[in-house]
Image 1 (cartoon, rainbow, N blue to C red):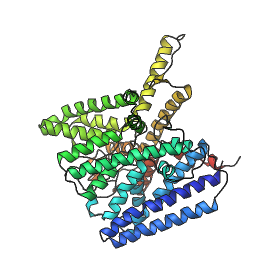
Image 2: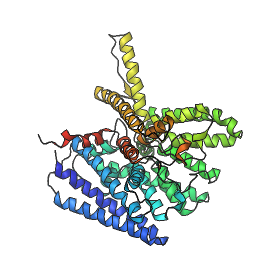
Image 3: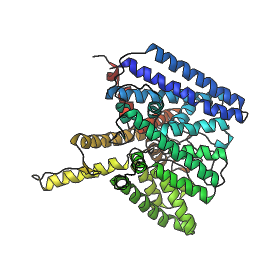
Image 4: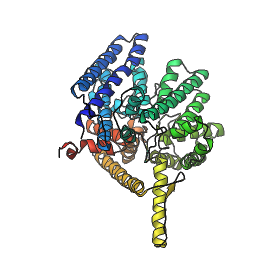
Length: 483
């Protein structure tokens, strides 16, 4: 295993994080938050020092990375950026307890949006921006960002892209992986900028527009108001709802649209399944919550927003949907927590493509039972799905279920909250969503969970965002043994 290249690349990531910390530092200075600016700046210095030292110490001519190294790099990079990214909260004293700060930062980078803050409106502007900026960085991927801007990237970087990008199948848009990363980020930046403009047009203040655009683009959900998006106008709520949906679409399709391959883009089976699931869910939720509001326009707006927020694993809200006396609507939202949106998007969850392949695999096995001599194949997006991909999806689903059960069991040692709270907390963090279906938590905050539970949930957020394997491989002792 190429140990030197692993730590060299992680060092490169930390240097990039140091540079990114300068943006919230400038914002803190603009708002005269001098100690917050110092906290962010000193963290940037620490990140740069560690990253630069790592690059110097582990510099190597052997730049080849195989799948194993790619998985480990992704895992270590996310752990390191989370550990260092939590320091401004601790140094500034706004989140003085390190485990709480780490939980908040992991939640940011993994685009979960779960928070330990009770009153987010008391937080400084500099750290509010940093919270949401972590969403935007983590949404497309920390390593994907590095590949997009660094001129010299290691060989076989496709292994990094596969390890970090969500979904069962990752394709290059163009021959070079670095160019693929650039294209993805240009689309990402373009959609984010468009969203900021539309929010400004609707009268949202500039700072609010930037923060909410970053949170929406990364499908994260960190807000700056205690009532999330509820206090903004219906126009602004609709804009955010639409863009949450758009950021749940596979970014490869946007590239196909840009190069005018409209037929290829709009013939995507995953896209149409995503659309059907979305609108079916909106209808079911609307019918179930109508007696609670009795205003059809409000019901449709709330239903579209909350379905869009949950299926894309963003976590914004326009009402206290966790207290609805509408069991069907709440059940639909919980199920959407697990499905997620499209592969190749910034959303979490299982991903619709994986669900489609899983059901096709089940159907294929049933046909084999009924007609043993008939040759059957599974196709997806007009292509034959090879046996290794089918087995990979089945294995991933089994590991996914086992991991979720393990997280839930560990949370069950926490006697503070109900089974409903622990179940939805596990589902929310593991699928990178944010909200919890229990009023006992108070404003949806995880603050009252014990330290052990916060550590477990932080691990669950990383496990879900990195799709299990990179993190499990990194913590396995056999990975680091030299043969």
